[in-house]
Structures are given as structure tokens and as C-alpha cells.
Amino acid sequence: MLTPEWLDKWRLWPRLIITLYGYAFYRTTEWFMALEDPSNAQAGFVSVIVGAGAGFYSVYVSGGQKVVGVKDVDKK
Image 1 (cartoon, rainbow, N blue to C red):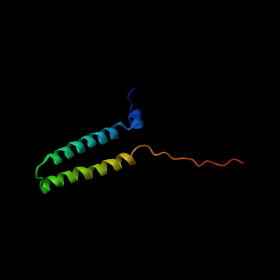
Image 2 (cartoon, rainbow, N blue to C red):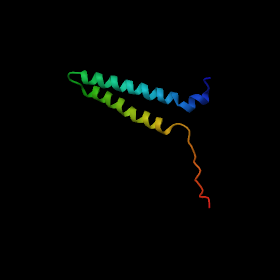
Image 3 (cartoon, rainbow, N blue to C red):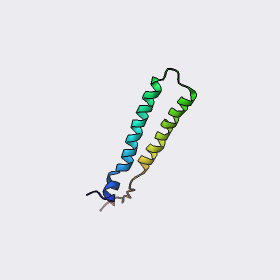
Image 4 (cartoon, one colour):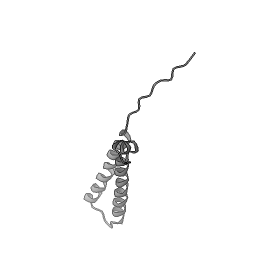
């Protein structure tokens, strides 16, 4: 059954977003390398796409549930 808890556990939305970003990054790179004489505006566009990836990745890595661990206590 599809529940909000299940979606949170498997982190489907963040994984979908990072996958779509990867696709957009690949297509942008492909497009830019096919240009004969890229302009500064086109290079700036690619720079924005690459920079956005850092933001997406940091949100993906820092997201999710925070697990608080308990220190192991040595038993005597």
C-alpha cells in the first residue's frame, strides 16, 4: 500500500528529482558540446545547470530522517 510513510522511507521524491537532474545535466552537456562556437550566454546557462546540481545534491544528502544513536555502554 502506498502511504506517506512508505514514500518517506524510500525517499522517492528526492531520488526522482536527482534522477531528472542527471538527465537534464546530460542533455545540457550534449547540447553544449555540439555547438560550433558557444557564446558566453550559452556557457553561463551551462554553468547555472551545473551549479544547480550542487544545490540538489546537498538537499538530497542532508534530507531524510535523522537517526539519533545511543552510545554502547560497556558492561562489566
